[in-house]
Length: 542
Image (cartoon, rainbow, N blue to C red; front, side):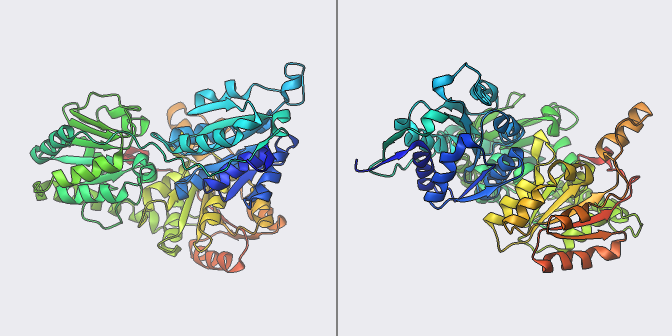
């Protein structure tokens, strides 16, 4: 050992060695050593206007790069403000590392500024949460936490550092530690053989795939499996784009039939949560045989015929080889294609509507037609993003980001900033409901200051549509479900130094998008949408 450094320097050195290039934060005295350490080691600091956005940006970085996203927040309210993003990361399996400040040990329990036991607060939302004990542990603990976030079921981790520990010093490590994530056990050959046999015997097999495929870097192996066994694929979450639009085995608009009439369902990297009715009828038939392939048995509420838990990439690769020679089942695939085509045809009236105010489906369709094939689209909202999730398809995975099953509004600006920072050469479009826009609108100041030219399209219908329409239908009344009419969110962004436009008619959408991207600024296209246009929930499973 030849040199020494303070704890903040040692933590950021561990982050740098682990490949971290960006730190998302909001300045607070409890974390100054992290900020100065990041500057010392060439980690770019993106300071936001709210700790929630800092943590969401770090989670967004994880979602688009599959690396650990890192946020540093000050003690007390800094940590509590980041809690929604930590919980969202847990629900989406996002590898997020939140570093918090903490009141000094020397005065613990005496009522120091922002004194709080953060670990007790966040431990149910994280894979691991600790208070750093000493400067001597700083490098190794930070490095190990990066590994923990990426091992097994990926997810958030948390470490706070008492202020006096932060300013303590220790020797620099002699060598860089290389910590390889633990991917879990290799697949059991007997289970692979049994799963392959079930696939060959099935008359109406189907696959539903989810985010664990993305986190396991297993998209190629999934494609090999469904193509080798001629399996119809539906997806949710971060699995969007695992097969491109138009692929003969991709049935995004026939999920109801593909699952509801299947005699065998492969549940690959997706929890049996509310999105799949917990694996129960009518979404999953009672008598359907089940194959589970995932990193672990998290939220699997039915007994499978075969379960392979561990290294998903290896399991899918082995099964793709083992299913060679499986029948094509042309009649089953043709039936699903007919259902998929019919569902798309039913949407033509919405996506082709010339109404003013603008139908949200027409707005989504116009954005989709405008965007480059590798554009990254971010959803933040309720009904408006439901339309987007229904209509938008991507050529590859990692090109659509939304809040996921936790559903926290206000995540969009953080996600969009991270996407543009990770991929500065791509278009990044934030699709925000007007309600969601209000959660984090001041982050357009962050985008302006850091020159992050995200284009935000606001679907402005003046209501909380996800609540108002069902409330009227179920209760016959609408309470606390209205917003301001024609609120000029575009002027808000203009006043912060960005580009803004108001759009009233469908034919104005594309020209407004062209001008927004040409401006080179963070931009808001504020589109006045029809408040009576309700998302067709009766077909939510199609």
